[in-house]
Figure 1 (cartoon, one colour):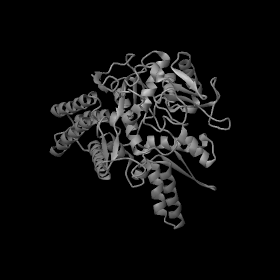
Figure 2 (cartoon, rainbow, N blue to C red; figure 1 turned 120 degrees about the horizontal axis):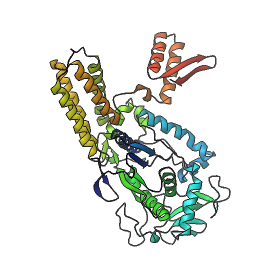
Figure 3 (cartoon, rainbow, N blue to C red; figure 1 turned 180 degrees about the horizontal axis):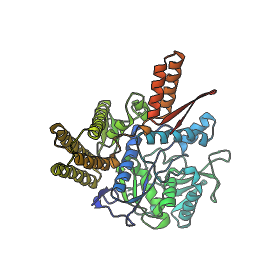
Length: 466
């Protein structure tokens, strides 16, 4: 039976969804003020592995991942550029989905934007004001932590005394509050501030935490199965989500809480000051393939720290190439008719090992070992000519089952970004100017293989995806 380490209870628990055969899950998405970095994508890849394995187990999955398109960083950057917050975030939303697709991460069923759910946020705040769990101070609205005795049940942090939340988004020193631990639900802003909305309790903008509560409950209901995200969000963000959601409804917010551990770079914390906060595009521009990056990101179980190194990524690249070459050789091998019952039994045993590993709190490291054992056994059979045509069919079906979760055996159409396309088109134009038509045709063929169609028009080259 599928088991998760539930950070809410602090225990490993059998997974039992609220509704038989259906899973409702929410995974915190990006704040679209810049390109997402590789640490973000470790969390999103974890969410994808979770989603895919739930589907593998036969569940109907409703997956929601938000886009935070209003917060102080977005507002400040938009003001610097003298543009609206929508103009500020739009290109980064496009880039995010390109990155998601390139990593072969399945898109969620619902990807709500915070700015489109202000009414839902206001409704929750009105409820909290009415039941005494929120209060107004200098025009802003705060959650009253003292009115929610269970505060801290997720992070297991003791909140004796006035302990501050430890996040730049808590805004501990900007507004007057009853208690330093209280957090903003709604922030008063000036009438001239374009990033603001009217509410019964005054014009302003939402606090960061209320956004996720509103979007999660709108699409998943007041109580849902799984809430996931990076460990950095456990406190204060997820703790505050629980407080305001359960404070408003009186019901359990999410049954299981799963957190992806930190990603380090060369054994150091990722940060701008160290210059190691690589975006996905930074790494691709160094010549690495997205599927190799994907492999590395989930090669260590989600609840264990991952040390990202370029040497490790080179190893992941070699592994992906070997796996894809293995599948190609197996598919094209000239085999005799018949079957080897012992080989097929071993192959099914490796699939059972995979399932046992994934059932154990998504132990992707052990699950990958099962895949590599299958490859080794099959390669041996190929070398010894003990694999027959029916065995190949069975093993390819098993590989497809592995890959329905891992997503690493290749789909070239999701491995190219718009920036790469533009560069290849420019290279092709340069080749044509130099009358290097062989190179020009080669680039066209490369793009066609990746699902890109070129059209030479009087206004220049246009492209579209198949």
